Amino acid sequence: MSALLRPGSEAIEVNGWWFAHRWLFIRRGMQLSILTLFLIGPWFGIWVIKGNITSSLLLDVIPLSDPYLLIQSLFAGHWPETTLVIGAAIITLFYFLIGGRAYCGWICPVNMITDFAAWLRQRFNIKSGAHLPRQSRYWILAMTLSGAAITGSLLWELVNPVTLLYRGLIFGMGSVWLLMLALFLFDLLLSPRGWCSHLCPMGAFYSLLAKYAPLRISASKREKCNDCMDCYAVCPEPQVIPPALKGAQQGNGPVILDINCTNCARCIDVCSENVFKFSHRFNNSIQSTHNFKQSEVLS
Image (cartoon, rainbow, N blue to C red):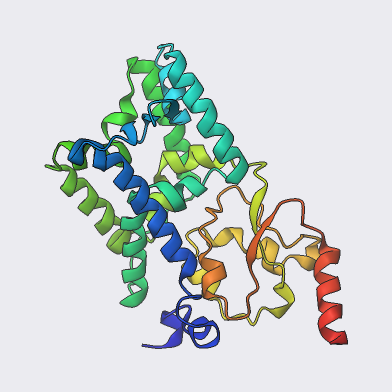
């Protein structure tokens, strides 16, 4: 299989296997750790977190609630309890700071399933499939809220894969296995990254929280880019890369500001030239990259 089909192979040669995968493993550790914290209560009686991914209580003190669930409740005409409002405010502030779609890359357990499907597509060079408009997720988001308003119920939560997966792991998977398999096959065979990057209304909602998030990924050494395209191959939202990586002539700084960046850091992992790094939105001066280039010439 050619290197083109195996993004990151050059980064492995240059930086070593661990540094070419470190952020991937840190993310998987985070996702599995959060999943474990929710499960060790009902499974083993160790109650670090009580509840589920949409509404929980941390250490019997701190309420944590999905702000998307809160908004659905309001659209359905139900005024939520104070703890739900406080919990949603805490989560909203958290994702406002680190970037809303970090939820998709670092928290959501379904991401592990869809990422595996994307990896298999690359591994076996599967090219077939429909390319759905990425804006579809925002239309579906609007439909979930409209459905809540019309029915007076949390309609989306009846089919939400994340909610059903957590519920299934606690009470028994049953038909939830079929839903997870359907999402996997959908991404593998029908639409590349079709669910998370094109259809999921939760991703659409959390992207709106990322508008002014300080934490960003920056192509701080973009003048060193060798056009290997590995970052595009692994990025779940490759359309977010060009303005930062190739937009200097258009007056764009090196920071990825697109609200759909998941901060997954796979671009950092697979880049053999170490073009990308975690930074912040205020370090977006074009002059900073010019200064770096001059220092490289002088050295």
